[in-house]
Image (cartoon, rainbow, N blue to C red; front, top):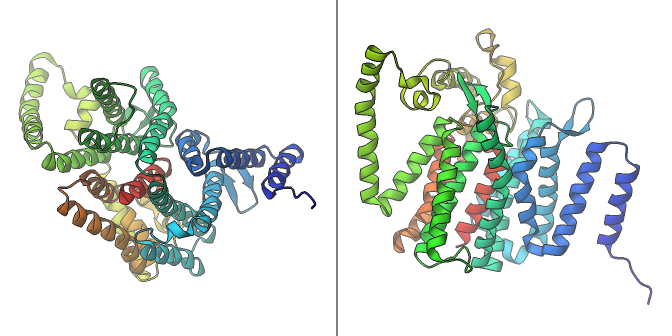
Length: 457
């Protein structure tokens, strides 16, 4: 019987040959990423997806590296990684179809993704529709894939995922600390030295830090209930010290991004958790915050009048206690919404095509907004409604309504065992009203992955 060379080996050799003869270094990088991911899948099996998820936050540092370009189309490093995940997801769900049929809310997910893809027919920016639909598909694919993996592997998968996430945070957070120490953060919105780590913007680092806090909180609650243990090699007391250290670090990182919407997200999260688990602590925290704002202004006025010393000269304090036109984007967001909504009404049902917001807004924003170099809605509901119409917005919200309904129903019967899951969804929905959460890809990949795990639990 003749020996047959496995297809995987043939593909591996073909990719190696491609990297040797291809003159484009960017495409070589994509090929090497494919080789590395294929090798990881061969070695680690179901855990291979964790390697791709682990490197995603750090890879964002090279987001501007164009790996392929034509006259009208280009693919950067992030897009290449997204394509790898997209192709892997197709293979994964085919091979795991016996588990995939149990993925919750798959019908509204598939209908929504289908509607976004269909919008290419009437899209005002067809290339953006293709790109953004793939990115959106990846988010829901991660939700489904991690639901399947948690069901297949069990509780140890959740522990492994947490360890990988903490490892994935090392480089972004170390770089953020370096930026803070060396004063090399971004100077934007009237604030100097906003740390951003490996990400494109401080808001994305803030989202990632907030997610780390949420995940650590979930595991603290589970450990306290003797459900999961991070490691059996160290004592519970040592684990507690480790958690306090991590919590403090993530809070400091979040603070020095100066991202108010993330601060509000953290406040909402802690408020919900406090209502269930820490009512006395919550009341104390609310009283302390109220006392701070009652006392701060008269004390600061007295210091200014008598000593010429203004506490609000410190950026962090100013961000917490004052508003100014340059640093406060509420008016700017309202202005964008007021000008976008009339455009949306012209195509209320179908929208302009998924991903087409930047092009349509740039073409229609007029002279008063010409100075504005951003083309983002800073409101995911406005963005999705504008791009996919009322139909798409309803389909998008259906997923979250279904997710919340099932989880609240389950927790109602079991003493709110998944309160962190519920709180994380509400925080995401709240922050989506004032930020481009769906474009915070390096962090949101992790969020949807954890949602899949928590839903499977």
